[in-house]
Image (cartoon, rainbow, N blue to C red):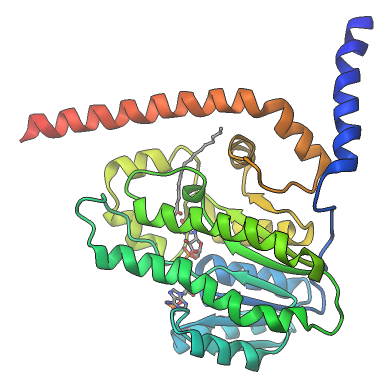
Length: 322
Ligand SMILES: NC(=O)C1=CN([C@@H]2O[C@H](COP(=O)(O)OP(=O)(O)OC[C@H]3O[C@@H](n4cnc5c(N)ncnc54)[C@H](OP(=O)(O)O)[C@@H]3O)[C@@H](O)[C@H]2O)C=CC1
Ligand SMILES: CCCCCCCCCCCCCCCC(=O)[C@@H](N)CO
């Protein structure tokens, strides 16, 4: 009993301390009757996020390139929910086109920067042009969207809590074989989010980063077929998800104002292992991070041991074949 009390006391003190010091402070971001603008919202994870937001009574705007696909997405949302849906065709690499679309859409309460492309291949064979495409779309495209939206977001009428949510990936927490350029873009989004949060908190704007594992989407189909076997094995460490599940978790995470939004239990462990100096609003999660950091670092080292073993074996069998 006494021993139990002695163990419990420091945990309680830690919880109490973190309850007072976590920054930014916890926040809830309402979705109902607010304007949710989603890039890459015409299919896959983006469309799933749109449907979830629509089911909770938000006004929806979708941005992507293909007008056909946007039209289909709009129809599928309007069939299921009675909400207003606007669509905008623009390439996120074209700043002027993005700015025009966003100005037409009007002040945004929740900006979901979800668009993205992924081409999976070893660094040595992947062309620089393909790498540059990923950087231009995933990273510069995200800068373009936020740059165009921020002035309007700051000027929003209701001044209620607003959100900028960026779609990263587990490959934005762990550099993964075959994902050199892609991982770089997704790690890049984290730097952007951490820095920008410090600048826009005074405007009641709150950043989120979502870290899904492999997810069944139209875009993932071709990627699955061409990815190196080692990439397939390593990325299978975390079980795949359906776009609808990621959509639900994304909206839930945004509403609860979470900075990091992992998608499953192992994702939560990975978020703790890679917490670094990122903000944490929830004192319970903050306490878990403090207590479990060492243990999850150990698990991470075991994973690296496993992955490097797999890579070594594959390279040996490849050499034997030659
Ligand atoms: N699927 C997965 O396994 C995972 C995906 N992610 C991330 O989730 C996000 C969505 O992925 P997913 O749903 O699979 O992707 P999809 O390929 O299924 O859909 C991508 C969306 O982005 C749009 N898009 C692509 N390029 C541009 C561009 N240059 N300008 C404007 N819009 C563009 C597409 O429309 P259009 O082509 O018409 O422009 C489409 O709406 C991406 O950021 C991805 O990196 C993260 C983890 C896992
Ligand atoms: C300490 C606890 C650890 C928990 C397990 C960690 C597993 C990491 C696996 C990395 C998978 C990367 C998949 C990205 C898929 C993607 O982004 C798509 N675009 C793919 O095409």
